[in-house]
Amino acid sequence: MKDDKVIKIGLLFYICSIFGYFYELLLNYINTHKIFSHGFFKGPWLPVYGTGAVFLTFINKYKNNPLLLFLLSFLITGGVEYSIGFILLHLFKMRLWDYTGMFLNIDGLVCFLSAFCFGIGGLLITYVIYPLINQLVNKINKQKIISFLSLISLCFMGDVVLG
Image 1 (spheres, rainbow, N blue to C red):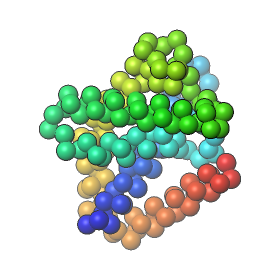
Image 2 (image 1 turned 30 degrees about the horizontal axis):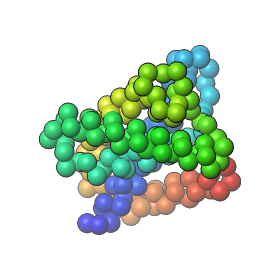
Image 3 (image 1 turned 180 degrees about the vertical axis):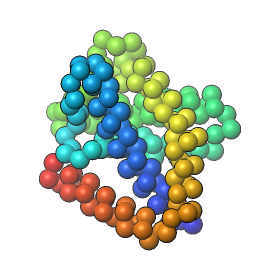
Image 4 (image 1 turned 135 degrees about the vertical axis):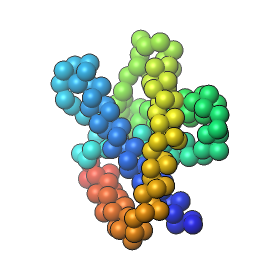
């Protein structure tokens, strides 16, 4: 059972990291009419999204209270975004996003709108994505899933090291 939890968390991380990449491509296209990727990875992933999604698994026990789940998702993912932005800015001198001038922003690293969208995303993860992952893990041969996760992890780690 513990192996299943690791598999589910791994799938959630990569699914949400990849979803986040395409979500930002779409937002960038809507705002600029150009397709470009934020971040410094070559692959189609933004691990800030996967990291936030993994943190949300700790509040899954509140899924019977959608308002509380939304508020906790709002706070947790906003905190993850701020923390990662702060680390990137102060350790690596990189600012990959900037919410300066937006409503209720903190140091331009997080704002109300981004945290609100991530709160909605938390509901989507809890009620749609994670249950689908549970079904997938229960139906597909675990060795195939582990092989897939191993391959994507190798690609991701290669991107981290070479990127």
